[in-house]
Image (cartoon, rainbow, N blue to C red; front, side, top):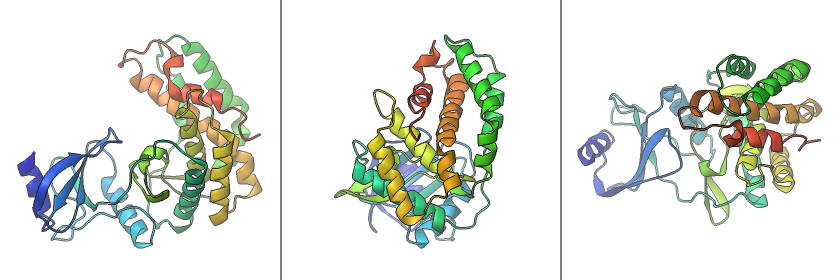
Length: 298
């Protein structure tokens, strides 16, 4: 591993001056902090298939516009990635730590960050997620878990009874979504967010989906699986300081929260739960957060 790391750094004209320190927080990538002769850097191996080059172009452009996220360094030949079987990129190290909990002040800052992303994102062709199609596919798959029928019935009723609301959601202003805005993707120093990390789920969709995802993660992070009202309000307030929500967007927030919760639950229950030995739908945190988030926005 040391020789491989040194070979990666050589592409950037960097020399390692200390050991590599693993950085935790994500299961889809192998990330280490390394001291070099030109300062500390972060080396990231992309273990999950995806449009890595699109992500790096986007993040680089975003960083150039002053958004607090580290842009990839360029190799001595001007590339963002080191060639090889597994894509590898190198980033400047950013001071900060993952917050132990989401506070009201951090929620305000997170809301501002999402709105800033939505108003300054570079023009990049991004993948689009058909969330309704994912739900239809999920309820057509075998689901041999306790509570599986209730889950199917809930999803079927959601798609049928709230079709008009889902149509309205899809018609709202759209753009680049971070899509993974939870506290583990934040770095904080002295009470200030220094970076929003991990754009691996970057996609294009209704902008309020990022807020819905953030609210969903607030619920998942709680023992009672209910997003705290004060944090939801703080995040909405921070968002509104940068980008005002239209009445139509505010009216669609609840269905967006419900939609992202169900999609997350469907992915886990169908694709992961059986292989991990789970026997009940109740074991799925996203399912419990979907139910705990019902009616949080009126």
